[in-house]
Amino acid sequence: MTDLDTFVHFSDEQIAQRLAVCGEIVCGFPIIGVRRWYTMEFGQFLNGSATPHYHTEVTARLLNLYAMFFRHGVHTLISPLHGLIEEPQELLASRLRWLDILTTHSDFLSFYETFDVRVYFYGDYRRKLAGTPYAHLPGQFERLSKYTRGHRSHRLFYGVFPHHAAENIADLSVRHFISTGQVPDRRTMSELYYGEAIEAVNLFVGFGAFNPSDYPLLDFSHENLYFIAAPSLYLEQDQLRRILHDYLHPRQEPEVAQLSAPELAAMKEFYLAQRNATLGLGSLRPGAWVASRG
Image (cartoon, rainbow, N blue to C red):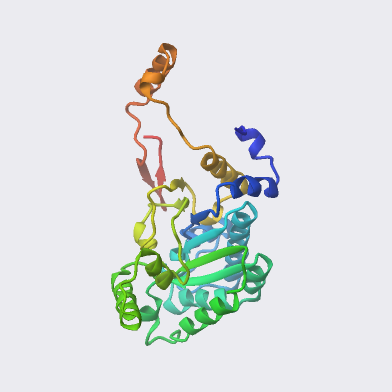
């Protein structure tokens, strides 16, 4: 077992090697609180429409974070984009501009090449975009997925309006049955919905509540959940390394019957000291709900 202080000073490659022992790591990383991050960092409140500076800064930070996960050995990222395309204060055209940026901006295209990333989009975007000036975007999604299909090192799944997936999944199931005469199993449905099968999720790193509807059909029975206290774009390397260290050293608690008298006494002392503590409590402060130790 590697102690935390040693682990956080490893190189990216050393951490990636240790993570590789666990197989291909799949991580849920929703993008939330983007406008809040931008306002805090640059002191500029966006009133309805995003500015070129906003797009430039968020693009740079988002790509830096995705690269950080991949350099540390995470194979697959599933990234619902709530903070980019579902901000109610922002004009629809401004929000949907992000979907165009993901598929055409030179920095994103270079990133997909440099890190050898297969890119997919999932969610109810066809219905949401139909009848809008952005109805052409699903075609761009498909072209990008086809273009990156030969990449082998990493996968990146963008969640675009992933909520209320039941109708979409039902439609895909019916179409599959009509074309094959077979009822799709879980793996097949995952491939139909996401573009490529995703067996299970190992990690979730998110700001705010965990929402299973962001990840339809996926198995979260063995994942580790990590909740960060600041918006997604504030995640830093040291914080990610602490998360990965915790993931690599699972909490295997011994049976109570196996504990010695001093160990039992220490456990009791801890429980008594923490018996009024509740994870999930917090307080509402100006502009934000802030978690407390309760």
